[in-house]
Length: 182
Image 1 (cartoon, helix red, strand yellow):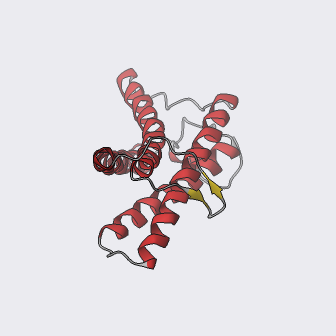
Image 2 (cartoon, one colour):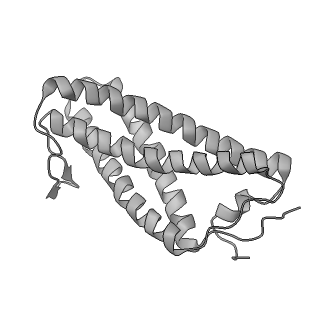
């Protein structure tokens, strides 16, 4: 059944699923914002959206440290070198997008002249000076990167399901919450 018997380290698994939950939540809140008129609810959701994005950015730094410190399990032996390169490229794309999306949002907020006050307590530095024209371009960039991230995450999930259902190679079990490290 499985030729991929080793699992990711527990911190990597927890960070993977926590970040997945946060990214999906940030995306859902961002979509909800589009249809809302200016209101106290919209401002509250914008703040939550920013807090989630900054949290994802911070967790990404921790995740990179964990990835460098802990051994990554090998890919299944039945995967061709080309498939393995695609898998590595997909993971790299996910990491780059997990950084680019919140950074573009932070830059957009800065260009609009609106500071990010993390959890209403810590004012983050402005990445740029206020520039309404640039803010509009950064909004489009933030939206485009979000779409690209959503497509990449969807592809990642579909490939994981394919490995589990079609290939039955144990790949999905490497990142499963709970269980023993094998």
